[in-house]
Amino acid sequence: MATVNGQMVIAKNPDGCLSLYPLPVWEQFEAALRELPLEAEGWRRLYVGSATDVEIDSGSRVLVPPELRAWAGLEREVKFMGVGSNFELWDSARYDAREAALIAAGRPEVLRNLVIR
Figure 1 (cartoon, helix red, strand yellow):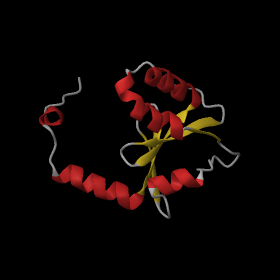
Figure 2 (cartoon, rainbow, N blue to C red; figure 1 turned 30 degrees about the horizontal axis):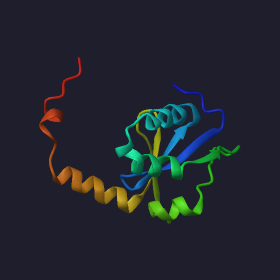
Figure 3 (cartoon, rainbow, N blue to C red; figure 1 turned 90 degrees about the vertical axis):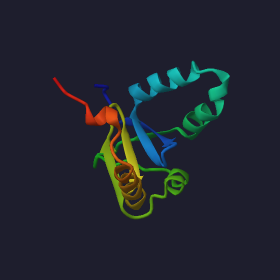
Figure 4 (cartoon, helix red, strand yellow; figure 1 turned 45 degrees about the horizontal axis):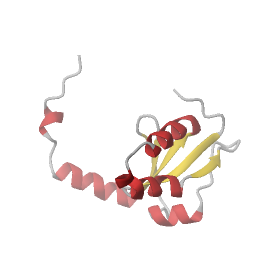
């Protein structure tokens, strides 16, 4: 697990939320983005161009820049969740709608047959 040391990076996520990365995780992700072929330039721009360094304050809070809040539709209620090596910050209504659509579409076969040993 990466050490945060009070520093994180917030960036747009194409799913419609914001992703929050511990700085060491972001540095690895950004390096991998820079290795992608030129065809991925738009995606690289989405992530790297929106990336904003933030600090976790003494109350364990981060200040999300207004332009990123507006882009993700964060107005009142939000959902904050860990998704592996980073976090996601969602507008609650947007997340609930996406989750309902996902469930309505049914689980893919690969998940139905997933066995943990």
